[in-house]
Image 1 (spheres, helix red, strand yellow):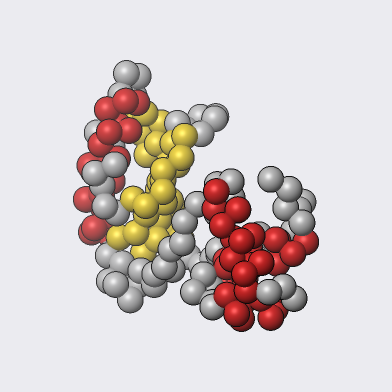
Image 2: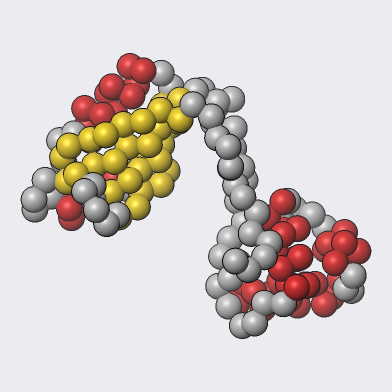
Length: 147
């Protein structure tokens, strides 16, 4: 599916607030509501839009510390780790990597003790490197143009 300037504008509006009414999006992009709805449906069908989510404030939910944890998994433990990490609620992203470390995870914990307990569980599978997130310079960047 070819994405033109108007479809990029619709995508930008949905990324900023997926609950924006179609009538409002149509005014902002200069198309009728049925046309906007049709474009959105086509982008969903093409798997360009693959879901709508809520952006949570994890600190307000009691998880004050964001963490990145990379792991160099022990030989023969990759499959076991992949199955295990699905069950760890503190981890909300996990990516396979090239290079020294096998995986990079992003998660949240309540406090340093909670982080220590999480690291103890994860270290059973390999060598960890843990970094606390101090602040975010770019967060939830809106895709709105080709690069």
